[in-house]
Amino acid sequence: MDVELTEVLDFLASHEPFSDLPSEVLRTLPSQLTARYYRRGSVLCALGEHSENLFILRSGAVDLHDNQGTLIERCEEGKSMGITALLDREPSVYSFTAREDSLVLLMPAQLFRRLCADEPVFQQYYLRRKNRVREGVEALHAGRGGAILKTHVREILPSPMVATEPDTSVMEAVQIMADHTVSGLLIVEDNQLVGVFTDHDLRVHVVAAGHSLSLPVRIFMTENPIFVTEEALAFEALLEMVSRNIDHLPVTRNGVPVGMVTSRDLMRLEHTNPIYLAGDIAKQRDVEGLVTVSHRRNKVVEQLVAQDASADDIGRVATAIGDQITRRLLQLAEAELGEPPVPYCWIALGSQGRLEQGPASDQDNGLILDDAARPEDAHYFSQLADFVVQGLAAAGYPLCPGDVMATNPRWRRPLAMWRQQFRHWIVAPESEALLSAQTFFDLRPVHGALRLGQTLIEQIAREARHHPRFLTHLAAHAVDRQPPLGFFRKFVVEKEGQHAATFDIKAFGIGPIVEIARVLSLSRGLPQVNTKERLLAARGAGALNEENAQDLLDAWEFISYARLQHQATQMARGQAPDNYIPPAELGSFDRRLLRDAFQVVRKQQQALAYLHRTHLT
Image 1: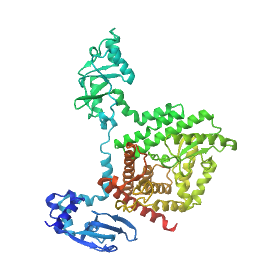
Image 2: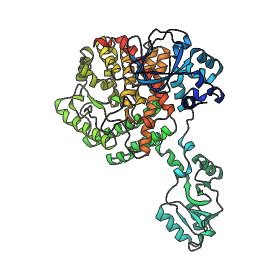
Image 3: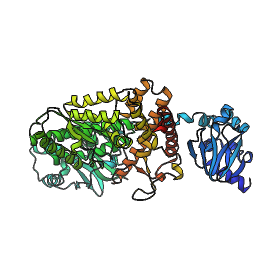
Image 4: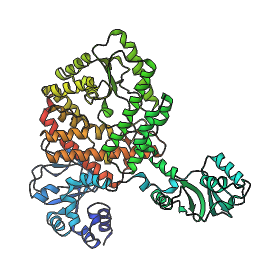
């Protein structure tokens, strides 16, 4: 095989689905392909043209446009084009244009169809492209399990090792245990583990038996104890303890003792369990204690990501913690300020309102007062709002840059004024005003007189569906920021500043789906605010068919999970979590599925734009 064919073979071997073909099949392909060079602006295949080739992009970039001239995809190296036309034997429904000088490999239709017939992996790749996001989501969450099933003993091993020699007196041993606040000692001789001495041994074998504390610890220690290596799973260590009814288990590395884990250490794995965390939050008696406990919430997210919990589940858990912190702050505020003069409802907005809070979420909240509120009551609720908002900030929830918080008098007012504000947004919408107001349509009561918040939710659901101009404005915003199909060629990244050369996955990936779901929900008068629930309800109401609903749900889950993985990685490194992902951080699996997910979003944005005629706004 000459040099050029060898280079083609190497190229194919590094891209799916060719890389999955049997080697004997793969080696025959280079000589059956034709290389063609297209200058920038050249058309590879025109709209409506019958193509007799599969186009495989070897270098450069190619744009796909539909019959409306809308950019459908910006193809990167290794991308195959013209698949649908070849499979269906129909004219191309897209035009393929070289965005830059490009080198393309042409595979004859006959060869393409033969490979589809003879090689299942080849056929599945092309026939099941639309299901790849679904399969990717299933693969992500296939191995769910508790932290104790995924954690190695070395990860929970206390440091430093606490040990003594066999001839140490019991009194000295007890003093060592007290100094290090441990309940057991490793007994080590010549760098070898010879025994364990615990507080149980002290109580039962020394004190209760009336022995002198001056005797050597070797008399009372447990000799040749059971141990585990530091590479053992925490689950295995727990099984050893339970099966042998012991609370202390020595740990070794290459046969040398390095520490000891206890049943309490293993229980600390559940210390970040949100149930325990919520209980600890409720016990706090001041803001300082609440702030200290609340910082464990990021560990909860890290643990849930490690367990491959779904993005939806993680968002709900993180929000539940945020809700609990908010409620406790409100209770502490009332304890300090006294009983509120009139009933009120604290409302969560934005991601917290949607049950989709994450590690990088800031505050979005408001305060609805009973209509019986008097002007003189304003001071009380101003103090209440300041207490809670500042407490949330101290607990790790940054202040809202747009000042959408209860400390802003605009968002701390009686129900009647809230009702009037929502009616104005819906009946007389203004594009720029709605852009900032969308956060308020993701409203959820959190604490207090919940009926006040529920009244607003019912008003929104009742009125929004009857105002097409309002829905058109919302739809225009939903299609304005489109996922970057050219992302992987770095066409769409931040150009400068601290986030240079990164991609804002919240603004361009998650945000569009949130906005699509919001429009679909409001257009049918549905009360749901959670994105997943909105999409499911929209499907039930006929606003989405089964296929499109499932595609959006899968895209939402995968893109959201990609963000959480990024944030969990940052937190593990001691960095503040954000929404800016460097393209180089993504593996080939994530890159491919993110691209597929982005295509799903673009398709639904186009459908929404057509339905609500957004070009008229």
